[in-house]
Image (cartoon, rainbow, N blue to C red):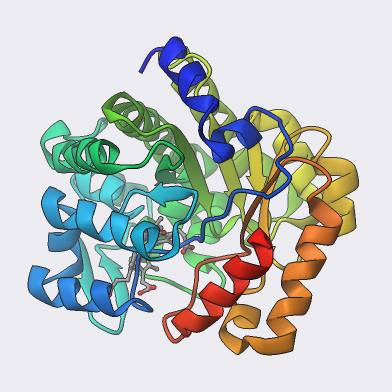
Length: 350
Ligand code: CP3
């Protein structure tokens, strides 16, 4: 994708305008995990596809699932349907998704396990993902932005080390304390893989990318700088070297006061904030430097009614004076009623 193409698209797409630093009177809206189990059409197609990874690697079905929420709700963005754990898979690790249990990988508790890791991603594994991007792009309206993504190296590493989701990411934190040199090797491999993977998505037609650092919030400030900020900064720089002007959203969940150094040091165009983030602080410290994305509590969306209305109004009141991408503070929860999503959208769009 050349710079001219990006510039021409900015004009018609509210989300790209916000990423360029503009304020929109009605902010663009999308939701993290907008393609997923709360939608009956997703559940039906998922059943047809077989396993979750079969769906991720089937371009025709993955494109369809990506477009489902955009068709239903008219979101301002489509996010590629895939998963952050595609990268470890493309680095030669075993990754499975067990129904009701989430991801299972072969754990990498120490440096010995790193020997089985490829040093660059297997292009054959990720080729169907790029194909999905191309298909979605061809079907997308002129106002809708296509978002690609990857997991941040730290968050991906937490799953690779533990082999599964853990409450506090203790296995990865322990590895990093006990053997920082080898942990840095793992992180560096993920940085290089992420650059290749994001550039591949941008070249296939993604118009911006989001880096999901779901587990950033479990690290102390020094560790956060080393394992989250520095690798993300390298990814931003590496991607923009190959795709000048590439627009990038960072989502370092749960980092509180470290959000400002994250924005300043990584160079992201927008920062996703979770629902615990004080909105006035986001307005005063983050918005002058980057667009802000967020931050309705997914549980308020699940609850609906007055609690949801209050949450939506508060986001708009505090953050719509600057560049804002309206979103949740984390992914939508599977039991969320569709009517609540409709109610939220109506309130945002007036
Ligand atoms: O709509 C979208 O947001 C795009 C698709 C997307 C998925 N996962 C689909 C998915 C995206 C952007 C992700 C990112 C992702 N994956 C993250 C970072 C964001 C976050 O939510 O924190 C993480 C940590 C993962 C890893 C992962 N994938 C876990 C822990 C799980 C199991 C938990 C769960 O929600 O089931 C998944 C599975 C997954 N990824 C599903 C979906 C729709 C559910 C699978 C199913 O259909 O059964």
